[in-house]
Length: 156
Image (cartoon, rainbow, N blue to C red):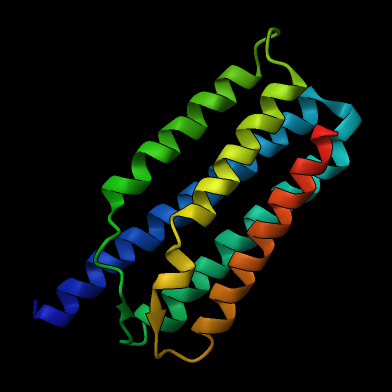
């Protein structure tokens, strides 16, 4: 395996973890929708969009890495950084199913997770020459900001 193939393998692993994270967040929001029916339409809408984000990331894998393009500025990111977040979301799903879990807990955690996605600046920092990559990255940032705004509106 040459250096470029090794790099693509590492980058593919990071993208796969990000896909897994998006799908776990979707599952969390589905749990919130079932647990807190008063806001179920919002949570279900967000869940659907998280699945769409996972599909976009699968597209990045297919249209970027599978085509031999590389992601630049990805050196500061690793699967080791994403894995604990996935585990935290899985724990939060289990917590959300407990009776003591309140709507405010869901709102606060959702704000935390959406903020952490933005605070990582992954889609701002990581670039590629692959056709369409920038558009996908921009959509992911824009929609994550929108999610955060929608969730914050529940705090009022």
